[in-house]
Length: 429
Ligand code: SF4
Image (cartoon, rainbow, N blue to C red; front, side, top):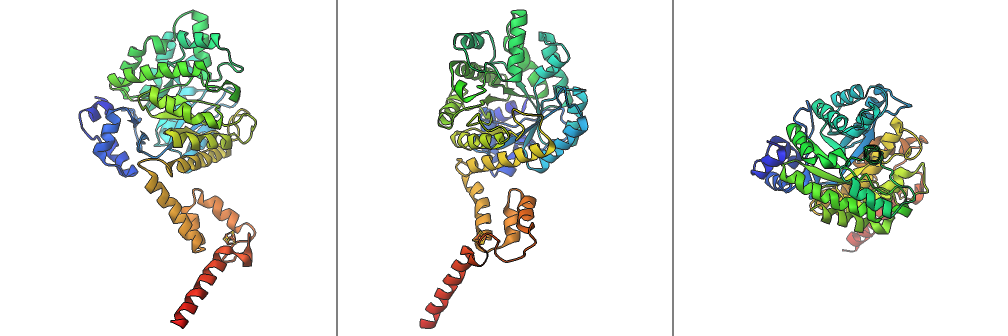
């Protein structure tokens, strides 16, 4: 029985209880959200050691970090090092998007090194191994599921119908999703339908066997502001909504991926449409990046979009790093992307039903430490304590204020003025 089926039967398996405890939500309520498909807890039954994570309604916004080799840079050690650094920086999940070297080795080493949920995109392995066939795509998926991968991206919404829509309404940048473009290539080369769409029932059987969570990929996500919110994207959302319904009927957990590059004023519409068309399936967004013109700063353009998307109902943010559009991320890029995306997720949590109060208590902790000029307290409350500590001490000047205003510290002046006022009041009483 899958986790979703257990939840449908009103049970609270250990992973649901564990997530409920961490999120401060009633376990029975969380089980109902899992049963309804509004929360997913990716957990492959073959995963040796896993700290389960809940993604969806009434839970905090989660963060994913993408890792993986490329054909130019294929060191498994480097990817494991990035995975460990990303976990230390607080990511909730990882995706191994490797396309270079020994893909099985990289994946297995990451799985053995971390306890956060791991996702993959099986079509990459099929393509790298020159097996971009129906059989090759399912073999890659099963191979990865057997290793214990917790969720897989399948671009099942890229099919002949959505591609016809794209042809009728061409874009400046076409298809920028790697999985989406490989699926297009398969359809163009063979004249056949996308196997993950055509054989979706078989895909569900395989997912059931490992209790694999499906992440229904946004293969037609817009790759630039000019292409945002077009007909092809919405056609794909409609397809994904239908596939979510079929996955739920089969007791398979499913979330939905979203764009991409979207101007700030279209994000709310986009998120609400995706939530509506997928009956509230957990929504996993890449960015969205709110402008195209900031290479080197795309972790920031994505975080801006992430806050707006999280406020509108997105549940899971895929971190972008400073390397986006430029290079394979380094360890430092991954860490930077993790922190910046966590900040976006937390900023959204401050407004999010079900988690707002808990999120605000963290900010309250920081505000109280700031008001008391309690520097250790500020470091403890900081999202990245070591960075805050390093900046505070970098000039070696130890004062109870900071070098920004020094003797003119507004917090201290206010405190002294208030104390003086209170003393005068006492004297005159
Ligand atoms: S010196 Fe200025 S910036 Fe620094 S703590 Fe005081 S008020 Fe804040």
